[in-house]
Image (tube, rainbow, N blue to C red; front, side, top):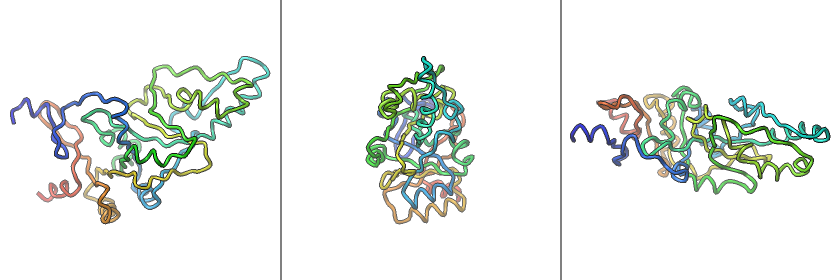
Length: 263
């Protein structure tokens, strides 16, 4: 292979992928969704086959948990607190999409550091279609829209307060699926629910498990959990390098990575 081809192509999982990869459409990006978590949380997720919804007041985005609103009449002021209490009822599950045709959603050093226990945790890959089958009626889902200037706080009226569900559904993009573009590297796809259920069933939706620390006790435990499951791949995300490209993340099966350790 000559130098030009080495720079422009990467072979991963038996496929020759172009670097840095073409831009993906939203439909392509969301076909694989990823959830970063700690090892202990992964064990709970795997054994219960559920994902926990997080409350909006626990989000790390100050704009999301300190939401604001406005009204244009004195009579509508009394509905502002009602709006704030209603928005607190909405819970969410945050997932990461693929970035481009070269960079999968499990390959973000930032996400591993922030949500994957500083690289010591786990990233779970979900099949979009299979995951969506578990959504209940009334649950909302969409990719996050990132913008340098957030929308104006919603205007609360008497009509809005008379049917909060219809109000949130009509304004779901700006109220539930818009964030400041400083968070854009999270590449988030979100599932939102106002139902009393705190957990979403995920039976059969897990496609692969990723770790960065494949020479560890946690790795051995996950291999034990997956030993009778042939439908879920166990893979290692690791640092690699190529001339004129520098250091980047790559992926291989855990068994293959362990063999490389031995050599």
